[in-house]
Image 1: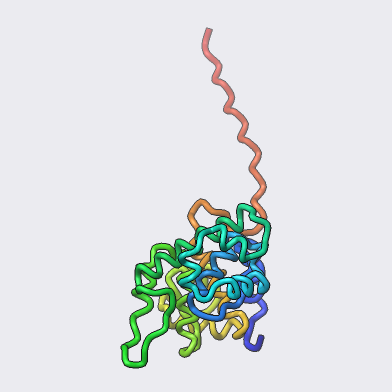
Image 2 (image 1 turned 180 degrees about the vertical axis):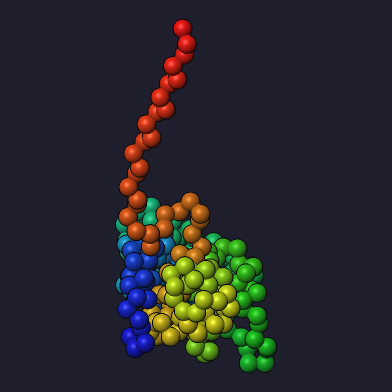
Length: 226
């Protein structure tokens, strides 16, 4: 993991304990699917389950027209609540992707211009912020593979990783310098998940809760004249 800083690596390890382990994908669609696997069923987010999903369906379009039961069977995991939640989320993602780009892949014929994938992914309502970040990171692999979404820019600033700037391009460069190549996809998933958390969600990077202050003593009652 050449180039990985100790602090950046420690941050990812801590975030992983909160958001789940992200397994390396083999294509851009799978990059999104595996983000849902890590988020909804972290105990099943393993290379073995990934490989079973690959083997069970001829392509992602075949998975799109399946039902949640087919997916949980393909996973060869107990049909528990996490696996069912993943299956439903993956199907929503695939259907939304298909409705947006009219297919379940990002292959572009040689004669056609390359679409604006960033704009396209913004329209994929079934994609979580982390799934979008992972898809775009995979699609941008030819340019170094670092794609800083707004959520990632926010997370990098909070964690102090990379330059202090709101420039997505400069943040991407900072992340590339802070992490090794092996951490690239994992970092996109974890940082996007962290940056997209709700204001009421617990902060996995926060320290121990501060001790509660002792309740203030009630004010002394004023003496009243007889």
